[in-house]
Image (tube, rainbow, N blue to C red; front, side):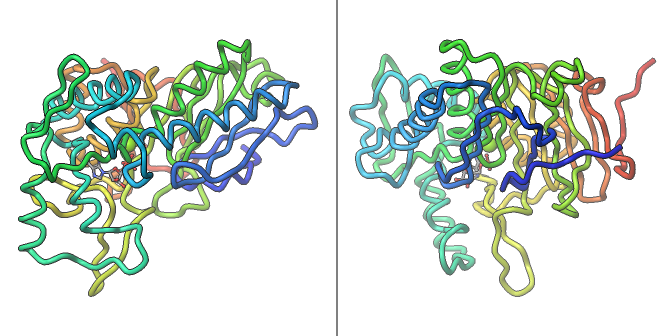
Length: 335
Ligand code: AMP
Ligand code: MG
């Protein structure tokens, strides 16, 4: 099977499509602290510009570091931010804090993406953890109250999925039928890729990068009207004394989550949920994540890449997942 990988500068997920002459309009740029790549089936350049403007608007609204963002001024947040926080809170409660949007102080303490990160002292971690925790925050009728004045919100685990979903909805409202909005490890798609349309196949083929060899994929999922979000430990990390420290934290320890997973991809109709859950399931580790899936608190599918090299696929995505030849994929058991 021979496929051309468009060189999108994204290492968790890739969109598989041919470089056909009538390719959709494309924009590559940097936004939300990551590489963004938009492919939109339109002749109208303005629509592409509006999609770019929308991601920039959302970034300004939700950034923990942008002066004037809602997240920096919790006393007067927009309705939009408030409803996103309510959604994030619901995921935090349901995942028992494996996803927790109030870890801002801990994220800043570790500063994994900063210039010279180092492992903080036990004491610093302990003191910082006291300022974290979704239980210390209440959301009611548009008002946010915090039990701890030092609590800091960080929507880094959910904002890109939210933005992808919003932009796809906006494009649909403008009559766009086919589009792929890629923001770091999050890809939201509507309709079909040009390549698939030409073959009479519906949807987009979203490749999941092999965490052991990022120039390869372990396989792809064929999806439409969905977001695929990946969280993993192999992209953003630093090393100290031979040990790797990645950017997804376990709030029960204050350290990067110790998990048997290298990455997890979550597929959902809802971009916000896909993004939040990929972070949560990564923190849970495979066994807990599998139970969580089976409890069906949320509607989603997932692909898990374990450290032992095996790949697990949930029942509902089994028929739409195409593994690469050498991937060690364990499919669900059917009676
Ligand atoms: P993602 O790549 O979507 O898994 O999001 C990771 C980002 O979310 C990190 O860079 C932090 O900004 C933040 N974060 C880290 N750990 C957590 C967590 N357990 N729950 C929620 N957000 C987190
Ligand atoms: Mg996430």
